[in-house]
Length: 407
View 1 (cartoon, rainbow, N blue to C red):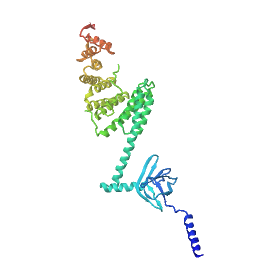
View 2 (view 1 turned 180 degrees about the vertical axis):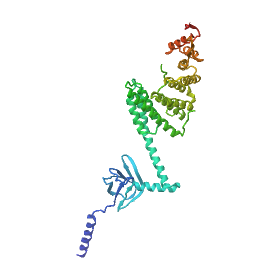
View 3 (view 1 turned 90 degrees about the vertical axis):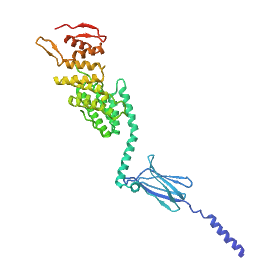
View 4 (view 1 turned 135 degrees about the vertical axis):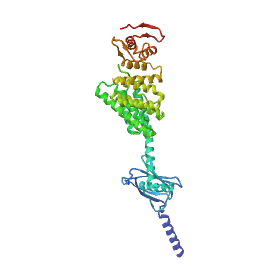
């Protein structure tokens, strides 16, 4: 009976062992996530990845920035905090055991610790490191925006090259670009020239003046920014039409001198349209000083502004001198000869018998124009001037077409 009783006890004990549930062999984690300003990071993903077996647990933060999970296998973990597809923090070798593991993610503290570690390593103050990091963050954000800005610049170019050009939409697109990249001189330049070109299509005087003013201001902004970038602040030592309008620099990546000269050239045109003759003259002189290789165009535009200003004899003389310099730079620039002659003949005098006496070189200027453009837009006027001067009119072949009648 005793033996039988012993077996009953053993069986009862075994029954107790096999019927008892297995103890859980997992841990749990919890924590709170805060951003650099101390606010909760909501709807973020906290990923716990087991470095030993590769298993991942993806947890989500609530409105208080809290997260919690049971059932994590013990082991070493890499914990990553993601928000909107961006990694905000990542840490390795966090040991999870059978007890609850608390892991808060405070980006403000993390950044401060990073600053202190960097300062110690590089021998800098924490303030210096913060400034360095802020500048790097701004540069990164700015560069990320440049792709969108370039897309807008291409879109604006297409709008300006359309037939007819869509100036208003191009201007709106360029304004969007400059808001995204306010320190890019080329954008301000493009915006300024778009306003100037659009002004020519306006019939309302008020709107025309408004657009020319916008162009003038934007070109000044482009010059100011380029000066800051390059550290270069150069100093200047009928109606004639400037030779070009709204022309861009050779390329967006053109040397600063070429770009700056183009900016001043167009600023001169804008100033002239607004009646700012002195500013226009100074702008063209700046362009000549900065970029002598294109002096011919700048001197021509300078002469055109002086001609259109309706100034006195001294201004006419200055205009003729400007066209002379344009001719020296480009001896085949026909219009420069015509407008030189026009300004010189305005300096002519008459004797007691009514005979017209013009300064030296007047007739030669009109003759040269006819030689270069015998059927040009000013050919008839040039012939009339020569007639008034009692000069023979010659073709480009040097043969006489007739002799003007004496008065």
